[in-house]
Image (cartoon, rainbow, N blue to C red; front, side, top):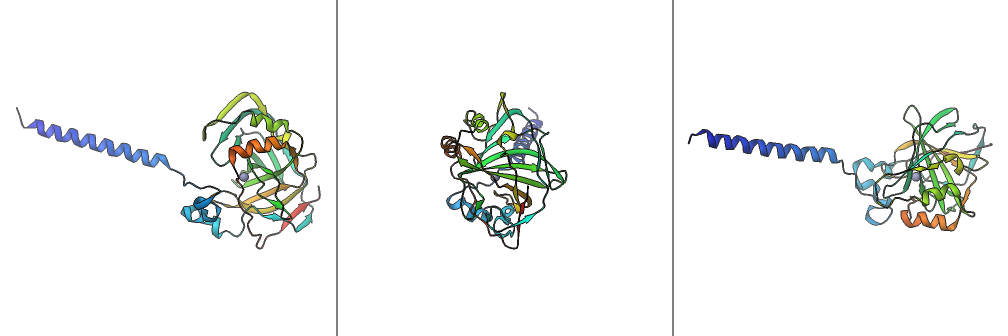
Length: 259
Ligand SMILES: [Zn+2]
């Protein structure tokens, strides 16, 4: 036999090893495994800042959300203009909250600035408090403007009558975490959650989950809407308690719209 065979073997081995290396590299760069965080214990809100370099703002930020809303300043802020419409339900349990994803086309005008609705999700109990008191649930409607800035509308729920729009979500809760469930036959309309009066509190805050990024415009609706105790419990059962503790107001002011 000739001497080329060992050479060939070596080359083959090198090719195999290199392609394995390539595959594993690809796997690593494609993973981007998010840091695990939670609402309790060692990965809870008090430790978020230490879990990942990118979460440092959760500890050092001076304009964090949520806050307690007590002292407010009446202001002639514009009335909110919601342009929401119905679309097929697309829902995900991301392990932190139940979230409904939305297609483009739903917008809001906040103080002469247009924002598009990306998703809405829930917190039990409420994240914001009013004069120190929690509501049993709070919904966050997350919007983005053309500059990439976020504007979030917070909506409080009190226990009362059954909420028909909310029931569509409860009836279609995903059974698996991180898997989008699309239900084309069910149409959801974010406008159906809104209270009749849309007076609001307005302040500059942050995301309430890591990385707690600041520069988020917060619009918290003053008037709550109703959902039945069973409905709120159904969501709480799936999400557990997912409210970040109240953060200091520091040198911020909360404005209150007249209308
Ligand atoms: Zn939220």
